[in-house]
Image 1 (cartoon, rainbow, N blue to C red):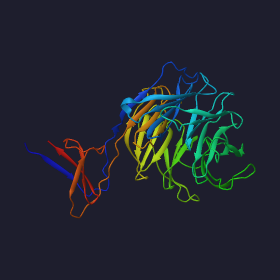
Image 2: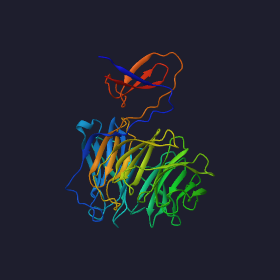
Image 3: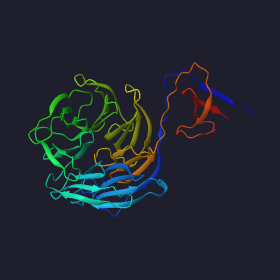
Image 4: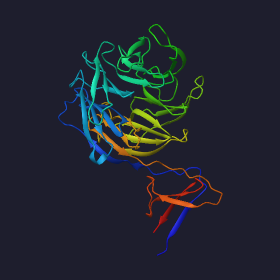
Length: 408
C-alpha cells in the first residue's frame, strides 16, 4: 500500500486544533450542604508537592479537603479541616501555601477565621496550628509573596487590603491596613503588588518599605482605560514579569493580555475569550510558561498558548459543568492550578467538585536549513508513537521540530 507523506516546513507557527483535556480524576460529595446563593458546594482549589507526593486542595461549604493525586488512578481524600464557619452561607474560600503551611480563609460568616494548617506530614495527615479571628475574620482572597514573606488579604472590611509579615509562619503580624482602596484580588512578587480593584481597574504598588504599621506603599501606576473594562476580578503575571493576564468578571467580557514591561506605559497586547457563548465569563487564571490556564464560569477549563501574546490560541479545554444558564455568576469552574510537578491540572467547579486533567502542549515548527538526524517521533502529548492519520512531531538532534501527517 502506498503511503502519502505530507511534510510542512518553514512555517512560523503550526496552529493545532483544540484538544479536549484528558480527565484523570474527579471527586464530588453530594452530602455536602449546598450554598443558598448558588446551590454550590465547592469553591477555590490549590496544589503543592510535599514528601514526594502531589496534593490537590479544594474548599467546600464544610471546609478544606486534601487529596493525594500523585497517582491519579488511586487518588483519594487524605485529610480534611473543618472551617470555623460552615454551611449554606459559605460561598468563598481561598488558599495559599508557604514554608510547609497552608493558609486558608473564608469570605462569609462572623465566626470565620484565618487558619494555618501544617501540611508537612502529608499525605498522612495535617494539623491546624493557628485558627483565630484576632487578625482577620473574613477575607475574599489571599496571596503570599514568597520572595518577601508577606501575606496580602483582600476583601476584608469592604474590600480593603491588609498585609501580614510571615517571618514567623505560624504567627502572622499585621504590618499594613488600608480601607481607602477597593482591592478584590492581587498578585505580588518582590514586593510589587498588582492589585485588581474591581471597577477601578488595575493598580500597581511597591510595598518594599512596608514593614510595620504606619508604613505606606509607593504608588507606581494605575490602569483604568482598556477594552471591556468592567469589574477587574483577578490577574496573573508571567515568569519574566512582562505580561499580565487580567480577568474582568462580567458576562461576555474578554480576557486582556497587558504589556507591563514598562509600568509607566502599560498597554493591551490582545483581547480574547473562550468562544463558547456571548455571556461566557473568565473567573481565575494562572500563567505557566507560554500557557495561560483559565477557569471559566460555565465553560470549564480553557488553556491558551500565549507564546505570541498578540495572537493567543486556545489549545485545550474541558467543560466541567453542562449548564445552559449563562445569566448566573454562580455556576461552573471557579479555580485552576497547573503548577504540580507532573504538569497535571487541578480545577474546581462550584457544582461538580474537584477535577484533575492532563493537556498536551502545542509545539511550534522551527525552520531548519542544516543537516539533521531524526531522534524520535511523538504525538501531540509528547509520547513516542508511529500512528498515522494524525499530527506527528519529528524531533531532530539540532533541536528543530517538524510537523508531518502520514496518511496510510
